[in-house]
Image 1: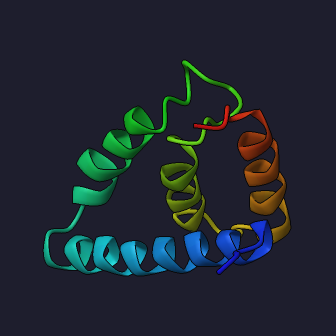
Image 2 (image 1 turned 120 degrees about the vertical axis):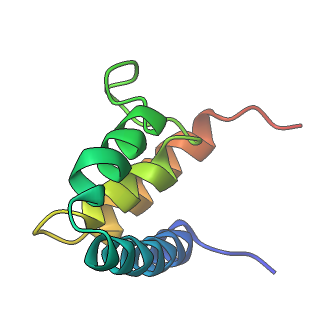
Length: 92
């Protein structure tokens, strides 16, 4: 089976949406936890300051962070990032 960058991008966005639903549920039960704890931890995990451009490891958490905002992640942008990152990854 082969999966395209677009399909993988859509899968990552779907997973991020599910994770976001969990975060929203936790924030509903424990008001303020999202802004006080969860988002700062995600920003740290995404290496936003260390890597202006996402690495393959950082990309999923950056997609999740994007779901936290008003504008949903764009599958075409995520697919371009995946193509760039996978082209740069050495073959094993």
